[in-house]
Length: 67
Image (cartoon, rainbow, N blue to C red; front, top):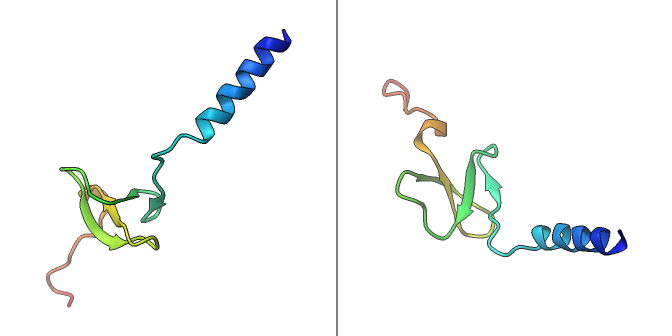
């Protein structure tokens, strides 16, 4: 039983420390990355100088009558 608990604790710790996790941006709809995926666009930049990649449906619409 102790071995099972130790294994579960180790797996939980390893899942928290996995490299490659990305920071969230743009109201939690975007992710900070070096390069965006094909269906994502850059709208703003993150504080770590990476691009905030956001899917187009979450970006604000440009209204042509407002400048």
